Image (cartoon, rainbow, N blue to C red):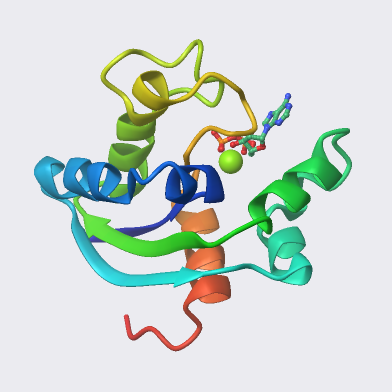
Length: 136
Ligand code: DAT
Ligand code: MG
């Protein structure tokens, strides 16, 4: 079994689509094994997105992700990393296929509703950052 970190970002919470996103995860057959509504502090946000630290959008991204409550989840299942990325759709929501979360709900690249770890390595790091006490 594989695990991935999923975030429903502040835009998703603001738009009241937590239930829709969770329904899609569960309908797929993935299992939620941890879940928490919280507002990130800037340090955690910067650590989470550290791979993007040099990008021009980094500061704006950190401001956005800390700008309101988000839902953090650990999602488990067969090839969970890839399975959730497929549900989420492409990073740019205009390019994301209809039927995906981003394809159905978003228009702007920064406000693309969800985050999903991009590899099992990232997933381990991100799960440790968000849920340091979670048992494996
Ligand atoms: P993903 O979230 O699909 O893994 P990513 O890791 O490349 O995408 O980027 C992280 C987030 O940063 C992404 O969800 C939205 C934001 N982002 C990416 N590219 C951007 C850009 N060109 N302008 C503004 N925000 C961007
Ligand atoms: Mg990414």
